[in-house]
Amino acid sequence: MSEALMVQEGGAAPLAAPASGARQFWRRLRAQRAATAAAAVVLLLFLAALAAPLLAALAGQDPDTFHPELVDSAAGGVPRGSFGGIGADHWLGVEPQTGRDLFARIVYGARVSLGVAVAATLLQVTIGVAVGLAAALGNRQLDQVLSRITDINVALPLMVIALGLLAVVPPSFPRPVLIALVIGGINWAGTSKIVRAQALALRTLDFVSAARLSGRGRWSIARRELLPSLAAPVITYAALLFPVNITVEAALSFLGVGIKPPTPSWGQMLTEADTWYQSAPTYLLLPAGLLFVTVLSLTVLGEGVRTALDPRAASRLSIGTGREGRTKEQAS
Image (tube, rainbow, N blue to C red; front, side, top):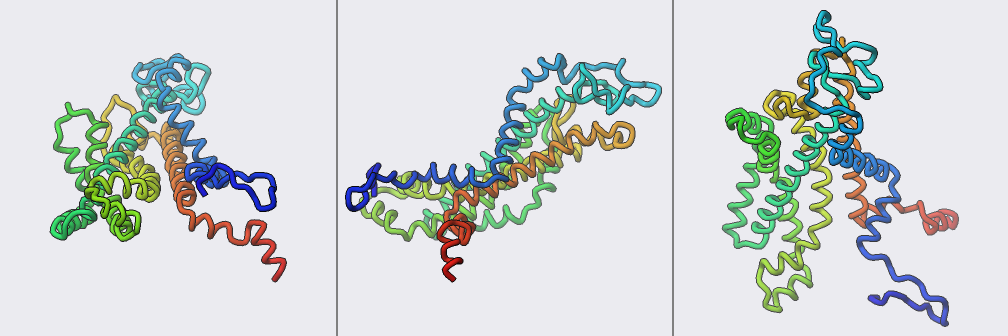
């Protein structure tokens, strides 16, 4: 029923209508404790990245100021004090050799790492949706051409191509923008295949046939009929792509072709920390731990989004756990 309220037979009290799709999604997502906790962690990380200047100012530090007096030059630049120089002025300690504040560099590095992942994911989704819809709605020749291009893209080794492109581009080009373009411009084939398969299946349904019979064009049907139905699988896949892109950015920076100093990123910090794991272990553990927590939280959240958007998965999970399931078990 489309009414806001449904009245039971016999004049009983009115019952609320079934919740909308968005409400059902949020209810299913909140029902998953692991996904809720992961969402809280991801939200906290994004807020810290957005508020990086404010947090660094609150700590009284900035990511680029050198503090040579805080490192022991006789010992090779090891931070003075315990746990990498942690104290009231430097909440997470200082960087070896330079004495730069680690807290400021980590929150500013979150801006770069998360920003690159967001931009790359948006680019992947945009290209993948456009190519997938064009292949599904175009003629046979266009479908074959785009499908072969997608297959070739799937076979391309992402890291090898990215290493080659990043090595030849002039250093004057903004590195975070370049990395986002490279990752998003190479790794869109998975989204395209999902969109094409779903669009081909949706084309045979009645509501699409009715829109076609009404005289609407292909792209009008794609915009008003297919795209809303494709939102769930695309959002699910994008949620799973996001932690992969963070890992790729960190790997490229670790290999020396990603973010260049003095711009901080978690991967670039790991590159500089690999020689300090014994004398200054906190310098390595902090960015590595944050990367692990971020990727784990995003993966758990992506799985929760997939379950919340897929009613069949939610119903399979609820079999035998609700009141009806317990009643059936007792009856048997």
